[in-house]
Image 1 (cartoon, one colour):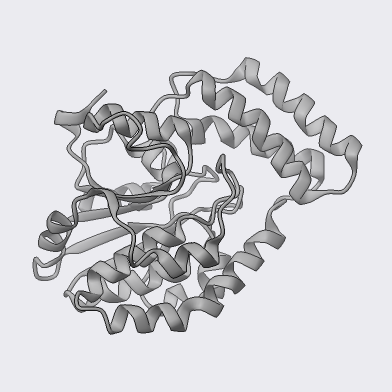
Image 2 (cartoon, helix red, strand yellow):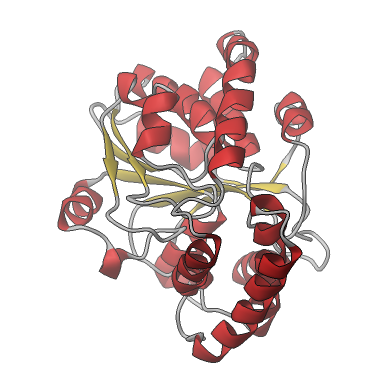
Length: 300
């Protein structure tokens, strides 16, 4: 998925949001917005929004004099998710189809996103995610794929907090007989999960965890580590969580299932065109998506 003019506007909005989260100093907040304005001249419209965002957030980190401007909200997200984990696990364990319930919880958790256009209530979303319909629902295909004995699954994580519910889905995948490896970011960017967050939330006790070798809020294959690319090539199934992973992998020919909530009008437009949905079906207001990749058919 390429960067659009609407993404350019969103980069400015992200500068404002980052400043509000990271500092009370109005001068610094203004400088972040000014720097984002200058950054727009360097944006490569042929690259995905997450790839362009790497330089933007590195600039924010330098101005704020911290490698992790979102550290506080990441910790809060992890703590919130851990406080909800037991109740969500019970809902999954007592469901008629625990795997589908775990998929719902994992997608619901994707609402925790500090780079999104809209603000959502994570606690409310997790309370209602079991009853909401998916706009796109390729669950039968996912269920069939993970039912193959000893299937090798590469699970691409996205945000902090969310990874707690990813862990519950990974447990269900293992119940199906899958061999799962989870993937996080190499370095902090926005509120994306790193190895530190995976350890804090106990993900490494569920399955092996590696990094993709980047500080990109997505999975740009050309920039990823050789270790990750080898895992990607060998995977029977790739579960891609979140919009950033979708934006960077949407044109990649691979056995991918995209699981995310739509929190952006441009991603909503992209999915609408790709799947020829009726106008207004997707608005970017938190709709839930489970979508199997079919690159040859849907390449745009």
